[in-house]
Length: 294
Image (cartoon, rainbow, N blue to C red; front, side):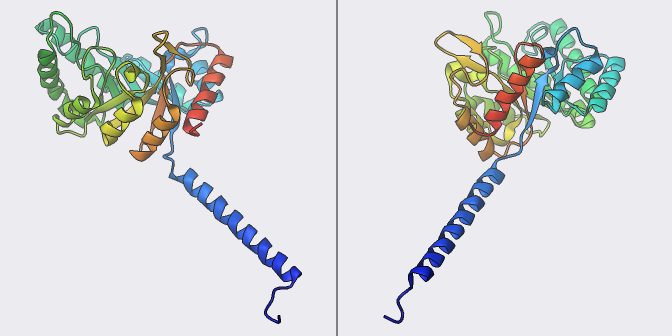
Protein backbone atom coordinates (compact mmCIF):
# COMPACT_ATOMS: atom_id res chain seq x y z
CA UNK A 1 0.00 0.00 0.00
CA UNK A 2 1.16 3.53 -0.76
CA UNK A 3 0.65 4.79 2.80
CA UNK A 4 2.63 1.93 4.33
CA UNK A 5 5.92 2.74 6.02
CA UNK A 6 9.02 1.40 4.34
CA UNK A 7 11.48 -0.51 6.52
CA UNK A 8 13.83 2.49 6.46
CA UNK A 9 11.06 4.91 7.42
CA UNK A 10 9.96 2.60 10.22
CA UNK A 11 13.47 2.39 11.67
CA UNK A 12 13.91 6.16 11.47
CA UNK A 13 10.60 6.72 13.21
CA UNK A 14 11.45 4.16 15.90
CA UNK A 15 14.81 5.80 16.48
CA UNK A 16 13.12 9.15 16.90
CA UNK A 17 10.75 7.73 19.48
CA UNK A 18 13.65 6.16 21.39
CA UNK A 19 15.59 9.41 21.41
CA UNK A 20 12.50 11.28 22.57
CA UNK A 21 11.90 8.77 25.33
CA UNK A 22 15.50 9.07 26.39
CA UNK A 23 15.24 12.84 26.56
CA UNK A 24 12.06 12.59 28.62
CA UNK A 25 13.71 10.11 31.01
CA UNK A 26 16.70 12.42 31.36
CA UNK A 27 14.45 15.40 32.01
CA UNK A 28 12.45 13.46 34.60
CA UNK A 29 15.63 12.35 36.37
CA UNK A 30 16.97 15.91 36.32
CA UNK A 31 13.66 17.23 37.63
CA UNK A 32 13.70 14.66 40.46
CA UNK A 33 17.23 15.67 41.35
CA UNK A 34 16.33 19.36 41.33
CA UNK A 35 13.36 18.67 43.61
CA UNK A 36 15.67 17.61 46.40
CA UNK A 37 16.31 20.41 48.86
CA UNK A 38 19.94 21.54 48.80
CA UNK A 39 21.67 20.31 51.93
CA UNK A 40 25.04 21.26 53.39
CA UNK A 41 27.40 19.11 55.42
CA UNK A 42 28.80 20.06 58.81
CA UNK A 43 30.44 18.40 61.79
CA UNK A 44 30.92 19.07 65.48
CA UNK A 45 34.25 20.82 66.09
CA UNK A 46 35.19 18.23 68.72
CA UNK A 47 35.24 15.53 66.01
CA UNK A 48 38.42 17.05 64.56
CA UNK A 49 41.84 15.75 65.69
CA UNK A 50 42.97 17.31 68.95
CA UNK A 51 46.61 17.50 67.91
CA UNK A 52 45.89 20.02 65.16
CA UNK A 53 46.00 23.78 65.58
CA UNK A 54 42.71 25.67 65.45
CA UNK A 55 43.49 26.77 61.90
CA UNK A 56 44.48 23.23 60.98
CA UNK A 57 41.19 21.85 62.25
CA UNK A 58 39.10 24.16 60.08
CA UNK A 59 41.32 23.44 57.08
CA UNK A 60 40.91 19.70 57.59
CA UNK A 61 37.15 20.05 57.92
CA UNK A 62 37.07 21.76 54.53
CA UNK A 63 39.52 19.30 52.96
CA UNK A 64 37.43 16.25 53.85
CA UNK A 65 34.25 17.77 52.47
CA UNK A 66 32.49 19.74 55.22
CA UNK A 67 31.27 23.29 54.65
CA UNK A 68 30.15 23.97 58.20
CA UNK A 69 31.21 23.46 61.81
CA UNK A 70 29.27 23.57 65.06
CA UNK A 71 31.19 24.73 68.12
CA UNK A 72 30.68 24.98 71.87
CA UNK A 73 30.41 28.47 73.37
CA UNK A 74 33.72 30.33 73.79
CA UNK A 75 34.70 33.76 75.08
CA UNK A 76 34.70 36.82 72.83
CA UNK A 77 38.40 36.76 71.97
CA UNK A 78 38.37 33.09 71.06
CA UNK A 79 35.15 33.51 69.12
CA UNK A 80 36.74 36.19 66.96
CA UNK A 81 39.81 34.03 66.39
CA UNK A 82 37.70 31.01 65.47
CA UNK A 83 35.60 32.99 63.04
CA UNK A 84 38.71 34.33 61.32
CA UNK A 85 40.21 30.84 61.05
CA UNK A 86 36.97 29.39 59.73
CA UNK A 87 36.53 32.09 57.12
CA UNK A 88 40.12 31.66 55.99
CA UNK A 89 39.50 27.95 55.48
CA UNK A 90 36.21 28.57 53.67
CA UNK A 91 34.11 27.00 56.41
CA UNK A 92 31.16 28.53 58.22
CA UNK A 93 30.53 28.25 61.95
CA UNK A 94 26.79 27.83 61.58
CA UNK A 95 25.66 26.86 65.08
CA UNK A 96 26.55 26.87 68.77
CA UNK A 97 25.92 23.66 70.72
CA UNK A 98 25.19 25.11 74.15
CA UNK A 99 23.33 22.21 75.71
CA UNK A 100 22.11 23.18 79.13
CA UNK A 101 22.47 20.05 81.22
CA UNK A 102 24.73 21.82 83.71
CA UNK A 103 22.06 24.37 84.63
CA UNK A 104 18.67 23.28 83.25
CA UNK A 105 15.99 25.92 82.85
CA UNK A 106 13.54 23.47 84.44
CA UNK A 107 15.21 23.62 87.83
CA UNK A 108 13.39 24.85 90.94
CA UNK A 109 16.65 26.36 92.23
CA UNK A 110 16.86 30.07 91.48
CA UNK A 111 20.66 29.93 91.54
CA UNK A 112 20.69 27.23 88.87
CA UNK A 113 18.26 29.22 86.72
CA UNK A 114 20.36 32.35 87.06
CA UNK A 115 23.42 30.47 85.88
CA UNK A 116 21.55 28.80 83.03
CA UNK A 117 20.18 32.09 81.75
CA UNK A 118 23.52 33.86 82.07
CA UNK A 119 25.35 31.12 80.20
CA UNK A 120 22.69 30.97 77.50
CA UNK A 121 22.93 34.71 77.00
CA UNK A 122 26.68 34.35 76.57
CA UNK A 123 26.10 31.56 74.03
CA UNK A 124 23.74 33.78 72.03
CA UNK A 125 26.33 36.56 71.96
CA UNK A 126 29.01 34.05 70.96
CA UNK A 127 26.81 32.96 68.07
CA UNK A 128 26.54 36.55 66.90
CA UNK A 129 30.31 36.99 67.01
CA UNK A 130 31.14 33.84 65.03
CA UNK A 131 28.34 34.37 62.51
CA UNK A 132 26.16 31.45 63.63
CA UNK A 133 22.39 31.75 63.36
CA UNK A 134 21.38 29.17 65.98
CA UNK A 135 22.15 28.13 69.55
CA UNK A 136 21.14 24.60 70.53
CA UNK A 137 19.41 24.40 73.91
CA UNK A 138 18.28 21.37 75.87
CA UNK A 139 15.17 23.10 77.23
CA UNK A 140 14.46 21.00 80.31
CA UNK A 141 15.38 17.87 82.23
CA UNK A 142 12.74 15.67 83.88
CA UNK A 143 13.95 13.73 86.92
CA UNK A 144 12.77 12.61 90.34
CA UNK A 145 12.90 16.15 91.67
CA UNK A 146 11.35 17.84 88.62
CA UNK A 147 7.96 16.69 87.40
CA UNK A 148 7.16 16.71 83.72
CA UNK A 149 4.59 19.51 84.00
CA UNK A 150 7.05 21.57 86.05
CA UNK A 151 9.77 21.09 83.44
CA UNK A 152 7.36 22.19 80.72
CA UNK A 153 6.13 25.33 82.49
CA UNK A 154 9.42 26.45 84.00
CA UNK A 155 11.45 26.02 80.83
CA UNK A 156 8.95 27.95 78.74
CA UNK A 157 8.85 30.72 81.30
CA UNK A 158 12.62 31.15 81.33
CA UNK A 159 13.13 30.73 77.58
CA UNK A 160 10.63 33.54 77.02
CA UNK A 161 12.94 35.90 78.90
CA UNK A 162 15.69 35.08 76.37
CA UNK A 163 13.65 35.84 73.26
CA UNK A 164 14.24 39.64 73.25
CA UNK A 165 18.02 39.11 73.23
CA UNK A 166 17.77 36.40 70.58
CA UNK A 167 15.72 38.74 68.41
CA UNK A 168 18.13 41.62 68.96
CA UNK A 169 21.07 39.45 67.91
CA UNK A 170 19.23 37.67 65.12
CA UNK A 171 20.03 34.26 66.58
CA UNK A 172 17.47 31.46 66.94
CA UNK A 173 17.09 29.42 70.13
CA UNK A 174 16.76 25.84 68.87
CA UNK A 175 15.44 23.34 71.42
CA UNK A 176 16.47 19.71 71.05
CA UNK A 177 15.33 16.38 72.45
CA UNK A 178 18.39 14.69 73.98
CA UNK A 179 17.15 11.77 76.09
CA UNK A 180 16.12 14.20 78.82
CA UNK A 181 12.76 12.44 79.40
CA UNK A 182 11.07 15.47 77.87
CA UNK A 183 9.15 16.18 74.63
CA UNK A 184 8.65 12.49 73.97
CA UNK A 185 6.44 12.80 70.89
CA UNK A 186 6.63 14.92 67.75
CA UNK A 187 3.15 16.31 68.40
CA UNK A 188 4.16 17.57 71.82
CA UNK A 189 7.46 18.93 70.48
CA UNK A 190 5.56 20.90 67.83
CA UNK A 191 3.12 22.24 70.41
CA UNK A 192 5.92 23.25 72.76
CA UNK A 193 7.62 25.30 70.02
CA UNK A 194 4.39 26.84 68.75
CA UNK A 195 3.40 28.11 72.18
CA UNK A 196 6.29 30.59 72.16
CA UNK A 197 4.73 32.30 69.13
CA UNK A 198 8.18 33.47 68.07
CA UNK A 199 10.34 32.78 65.01
CA UNK A 200 13.30 32.90 67.40
CA UNK A 201 12.38 29.64 69.12
CA UNK A 202 12.44 26.62 66.81
CA UNK A 203 13.42 22.95 66.79
CA UNK A 204 16.85 21.34 66.47
CA UNK A 205 16.08 17.81 65.33
CA UNK A 206 18.44 14.91 66.06
CA UNK A 207 17.74 11.94 63.80
CA UNK A 208 19.31 9.30 66.03
CA UNK A 209 17.87 10.46 69.33
CA UNK A 210 14.29 9.44 68.56
CA UNK A 211 14.86 5.91 67.22
CA UNK A 212 14.15 4.31 70.60
CA UNK A 213 10.61 5.69 70.76
CA UNK A 214 9.66 6.71 67.23
CA UNK A 215 10.54 7.03 63.57
CA UNK A 216 12.73 9.99 62.54
CA UNK A 217 10.88 10.56 59.28
CA UNK A 218 7.59 10.84 61.18
CA UNK A 219 9.08 13.42 63.54
CA UNK A 220 10.46 15.41 60.61
CA UNK A 221 7.10 15.50 58.84
CA UNK A 222 5.29 16.51 62.03
CA UNK A 223 7.77 19.20 63.06
CA UNK A 224 7.99 20.48 59.51
CA UNK A 225 9.11 24.08 59.13
CA UNK A 226 9.79 24.31 62.85
CA UNK A 227 13.06 22.46 62.20
CA UNK A 228 15.93 24.92 61.84
CA UNK A 229 18.89 22.52 62.14
CA UNK A 230 19.48 18.75 61.97
CA UNK A 231 21.95 16.48 63.76
CA UNK A 232 22.94 13.18 62.18
CA UNK A 233 23.43 10.05 64.28
CA UNK A 234 22.39 6.44 63.78
CA UNK A 235 21.16 3.99 66.41
CA UNK A 236 20.93 0.20 66.59
CA UNK A 237 18.09 -0.95 68.83
CA UNK A 238 19.23 -4.56 69.06
CA UNK A 239 22.52 -3.56 70.67
CA UNK A 240 21.06 -0.39 72.22
CA UNK A 241 23.88 1.84 71.03
CA UNK A 242 24.78 4.55 68.57
CA UNK A 243 26.59 3.23 65.51
CA UNK A 244 28.18 4.58 62.34
CA UNK A 245 25.91 6.41 59.94
CA UNK A 246 23.91 4.06 57.69
CA UNK A 247 24.68 1.04 59.92
CA UNK A 248 21.79 1.38 62.34
CA UNK A 249 18.00 1.32 62.24
CA UNK A 250 17.42 4.76 60.72
CA UNK A 251 15.64 4.55 57.37
CA UNK A 252 17.84 7.16 55.69
CA UNK A 253 15.96 7.10 52.39
CA UNK A 254 12.76 8.05 54.19
CA UNK A 255 14.56 10.64 56.29
CA UNK A 256 15.95 12.22 53.13
CA UNK A 257 12.52 12.14 51.51
CA UNK A 258 10.92 13.74 54.58
CA UNK A 259 13.52 16.52 54.67
CA UNK A 260 12.76 17.22 51.03
CA UNK A 261 9.02 17.29 51.72
CA UNK A 262 9.37 19.99 54.39
CA UNK A 263 11.78 22.00 52.26
CA UNK A 264 14.71 21.74 54.66
CA UNK A 265 17.76 23.32 53.01
CA UNK A 266 20.31 23.90 55.75
CA UNK A 267 23.16 22.02 57.42
CA UNK A 268 23.19 18.34 58.34
CA UNK A 269 25.65 18.21 61.23
CA UNK A 270 27.29 14.95 62.23
CA UNK A 271 27.43 14.51 66.00
CA UNK A 272 29.77 11.54 66.28
CA UNK A 273 33.03 10.44 67.92
CA UNK A 274 36.13 12.11 66.56
CA UNK A 275 38.88 10.58 64.49
CA UNK A 276 41.70 11.08 62.01
CA UNK A 277 41.51 12.31 58.42
CA UNK A 278 40.66 8.89 56.98
CA UNK A 279 37.81 8.48 59.47
CA UNK A 280 36.45 11.95 58.73
CA UNK A 281 36.55 11.30 54.99
CA UNK A 282 34.53 8.15 55.57
CA UNK A 283 31.97 10.10 57.62
CA UNK A 284 31.79 12.72 54.87
CA UNK A 285 31.20 10.03 52.24
CA UNK A 286 28.41 8.49 54.32
CA UNK A 287 26.67 11.86 54.56
CA UNK A 288 27.00 12.23 50.79
CA UNK A 289 25.09 8.98 50.38
CA UNK A 290 22.40 10.17 52.79
CA UNK A 291 22.01 13.41 50.85
CA UNK A 292 21.85 11.45 47.58
CA UNK A 293 19.02 9.38 49.03
CA UNK A 294 20.91 6.10 48.88
